[in-house]
Length: 132
Image (tube, one colour):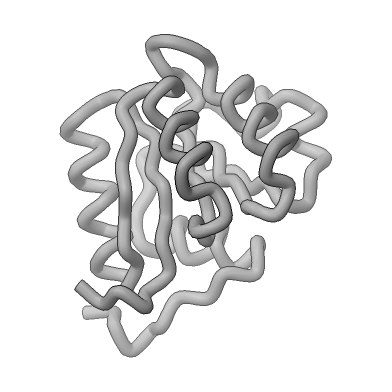
């Protein structure tokens, strides 16, 4: 793994989805740390917040909503872009998050194209030479 590759925190409670999404992001050239709950994500952000290029958060987490976690991260680390991943429509996003230019939305299920698009909207470019 390239230690110079951008680091992403992926917050997803469902293990199968977490592994698949982490693999997809690694295939795009990112280093990925994962968290299965808001509590675990908060601990990681407290420890490494500024190191993350972006935090991708599932909207439905078991211990707290992804929207609440995103707002907490925005309050403490306004420099870190956030992507909300959800099977719900983007219109269901909280207005404070929807109006924040540093917050993107990624509809589930997602693939390479969707991830690349939302990251590009946040100014995070993917090295296309890494794509299969």
